[in-house]
Amino acid sequence: MIKEISISLTPEQSAKEDLMAQAVADELKVSLEEIKHIDIIKRSIDARKKDVKIVTLLTVWVNEKPSEKSDFEYKPNDVSMSPEIIIVGAGPAGLFAALSLIENNLKPLILERGKSVSMRKRDLADINKNRFVNPNSNYCFGEGGAGTFSDGKLYTRSSKRGDVKKILDLLKMHGADEKILTDAHPHIGTNNLPRIIENIRKTIISAGGEFIFDSKVTDLILKENVIKGVVTEKGDKIIGKAVILATGHSARDIYEMLHSKGIKIEAKAFAMGVRVEHPQDIIDSVQYSCEIRDEYLPAAAYSLVTQAENRGVYSFCMCPGGFIVPAATAPEEIVVNGMSPSTRNSYYANSGMVVEIKVEDFPEQEKYGDLAGLNFQKTLERNAYLNGGNGIIAPAQRLTDFVKGKLSPDLPDTSYHPGVISSPLHFWLPESIGKRLQEGFKVFGKKMYGFLTEEAIVLGVESRTSSPVRIPRDKESLQHVQIKNLYPCGEGAGYAGGIVSAAMDGVKCAEKIADSI
Image (cartoon, rainbow, N blue to C red; front, side, top):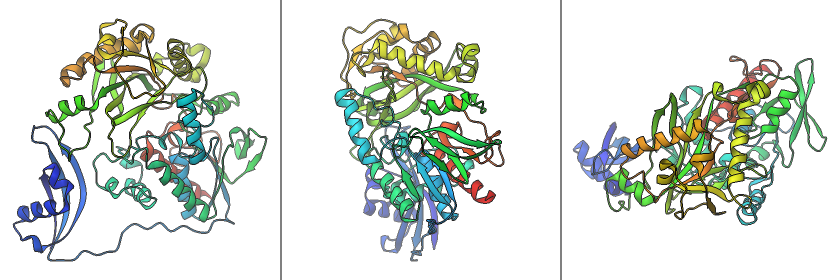
């Protein structure tokens, strides 16, 4: 007999197979010996009451052995002599597009402006120690994209866009923990992602695909509105049957190049704000209604949203047990982002706190046109730099002082390694952002009693939530509306938001190319 059940378990029961099995046997009113196998389908934390439970959906085999055959198969072809498809960018969209092309007997040629994972680590160390930002190798650019050195959040609401399970299965195949297949809000962890990205590269190369690192694309080869290839910064001309443009949301030079060539792009809404950090035990106490977190419970997370003056104010990329990192992609700008390891065992919890920015909010639209949002983003990051200190020391303020509108005489400890300097963010942030954040924080303090505390710190600025530009494409063919065989893809094209949705978009573009060739 095979039964599918939903059961509420204690954190300890959820963590220990023998205790889970006994709880399931009790629920089904059978003996423990009759339980032959249990598959976890999905699990999530229910912290609405003080007695926190793990709600778990299970498939249980009672007096019956399960089939050992997996329903997931990845069948790579030898594509070493197949038609070449150029992929610009080795982030999730580009890598998963490559895996899909290989399945469809097409050869991916991946051009990445940055370095491989192992080489990229040295540049990240240089940012934190020497405060030097390599414009082509940093937390945003390089193998794996912005997701490589991040929390590796895999939660997405974009199930209609593609096969989420296939993406998760491919990640598991390349080394991710199988828990990503069952957790309601799965994550991989910044400590595990580099190895997984390297494994994906090995799969692509072993099938005949190619990678060219340190290869920044600066121009397109066009003939009568049909793309024939790309030109790199070194002057190399690369020819392919089609081009997938998967450059990520921070490749500003790509937008500017397209704009200068008269290739259609369009401004889109996005969000900007700050990053807020608390001691993790404060968030645990608030969310789990406890003084000390149960040893079997993960570091607590939160999700907050409200409206202030007709604009959304919300938490973004919340990282329990994580740390804040410098995510600038050029000198004289400060950008902060958050991430956490798989264990989520840092002393701190951080989250982006951002305000919705609509196209009509962009200043200087007459001057910058479709790049007005991009310029607004640049201006905010430049202001953060001018109000910070010595390169990438971030401007910061106690959360309570930010809300009250006063300079902090001192600052709490923070996970941001380069350091912080007291600054009146409430004063120099654009009023459209700062005032709304102040109102939002007041609301969040009421929703989460204990959230609004002087132990929390605000750092500026969180500006890379998504691209302020969309590269429009035909809904059916996914090709650019103006340039045939050019496939704008992923976050940088404005069609995804996160690792999984970007990966699914990459797969979709690869499948459309396979159908058209």
